[in-house]
Length: 147
Image (cartoon, rainbow, N blue to C red; front, top):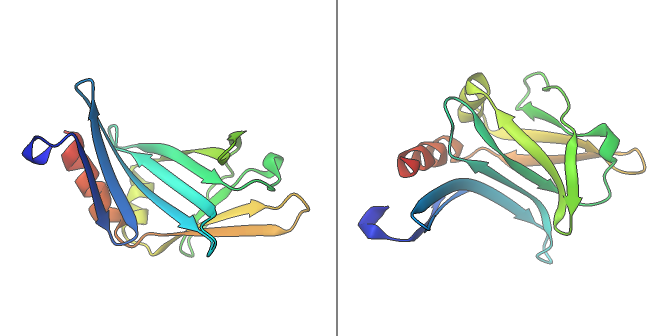
């Protein structure tokens, strides 16, 4: 870590990079959170430092979604990816495991929006979107810090 720091927080446009050292183990992640005007979180995504050419992480969505429908990711106007099932719900929201392979990461770096399509419990569409502004820079920084 720079200067022997035990933690680090940096911002790259819409993405946050955070590293912490605990018990001689360093963990670096990149994340984005979105909240309503009242401060209530709408969604959060946290991605781990890449392992090989794959980035894994967790997406947290609000309650009130049809869990059986899962969620679908779509990068800009490209074809949607296959649906992903919800893992579970916890007091903070419902969790989806995220797994982006190398071609997906290339697409994310070159795009503006990651669209998330979910279904509300009543059957209505429940769209979300994550800005990709700063994604590539934040990912590069997480890779450098995680070494």
